[in-house]
Length: 453
Image (cartoon, rainbow, N blue to C red; front, side):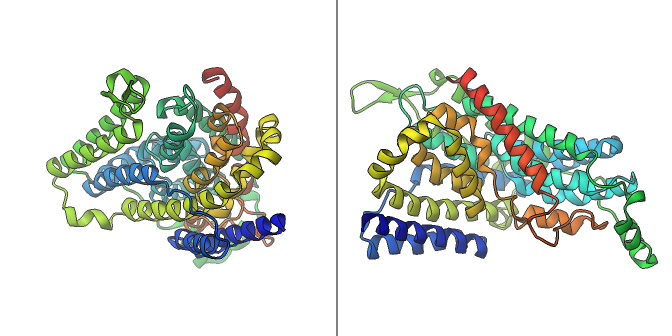
C-alpha cells in the first residue's frame, strides 16, 4: 500500500512537471502549485519549505541585470562580441560559441544569445560555412555558460542550497563553485565546437541546400539581408552601467573568496559567523542596481519591460512552484529513500548526475532542476564535492529541440541547415549538447575532487 501511494504521488509530480514544461513560461510554476495542492490536500503530505532565500537572491540579481539592460549595458557587450566575430569570420565555428558562452557568463542569462544568432548566421553564409556548424553549438554554448556565471540563477541557487544544507567546510561559495564549473563548462564547449567544424556537408556539396537555392527568390532570401549592431552607438551612461555591474560581480567574487572581509555577527550557538553569501549577494546587487539607476539616466518605468526582467521573473516563479512541490514530496519520503538509495547513490554518484540531467529536461530549467534535486542529493548522502563537479548535468533540455534559443537558431538560419529531423530527436543540437554535458562532467568531477575534496 505504501509503495502504491509513493508511486501515485510520484506520478502527480512528474505529470505536473511535464504539463508545466509543455505550457512553458510561468506554466511550470503554476502547475507546481497544482501538484503541491494534490500532495497536501489529497495525500495529506506535510508541505515543505519554499526556497525563500534562493528566490530572494535570484530576485536581487535579476533586478540589477534588468537595470543594466535598460541602461544599454548589454548592447555594449553585444557590439564588442560582433566586432570580434566579424574580424575573424573564418573561425566562426569556434568563436561563435565562445562568444555566446562568454556573454552568458558575464550577464548570467542565456537569453543574450538571441541578438548574436542572426549575426553568426550572416557571417557563416558570407564565408560559405555551413551555418549549422556554428549556430547549433552557439545556442548550446549559451546555455552551458549558465553553470559558469557568478550571477546566474543556477549557480546562485546551488551556492544558496549548499550554504543552508551542506555540512561544515562543504558549504562551497560561488568562487569555489566557479573554480570547478567554469573550466569544466568551457572544456565542454571547446570540444563540441571542435567536433562541429567538420559536421555535415559543405554548402557546395550539400544537395539539399543546392536544391533550396536553385529557386532565384530563395537564393536571394538566403544570401540577402544580414544583421549587425555595429551601426548603432551607446551612450556614456551605457558604458558606465557596464562598469558598475562588473565591479559589483568582482566584489561578490572577492567577498565569497575571503569571508574575513564580510562582517561577522553573533550566532545562536554563542559564536561569531560571517554574513552569509546569500545576504551579501542580495545587498550588493541591490546597491549596484541603485547606483546604475541614479547615475545612468535609467527610466524606472522601463525596467519591468526589459527582456532580462521578464525572463527572470518567470525563472523565479518556476523555482518557486517546482522546488516547493519537490521539497514536499521528497521530504515526506526522505527516510524511505535514504534506506533504499543512500548507499547506492553514495557508491555511484554518477546516478545523481543522471537524475539531475533528466529532471532538467522535464522542467526545461537548470535552476529549477538544481533547486529540486540538489537538496535530495545532499539528503541521500551525495558528497557536496560531487554535486559541484556534476553541475554541468543540470543542462538537459536540449534533448528535444523545444527551448526558445534552439528554436531561434533554427529560425535565424536562412540556409535551413540548422534543423529538426523527421524523427524530432535527430536535430542539430543533440550531439553538441551531449558532448558539452559529458565533457563538463568528466572534467568537473575530478577537478572538484582535486580542488574541493
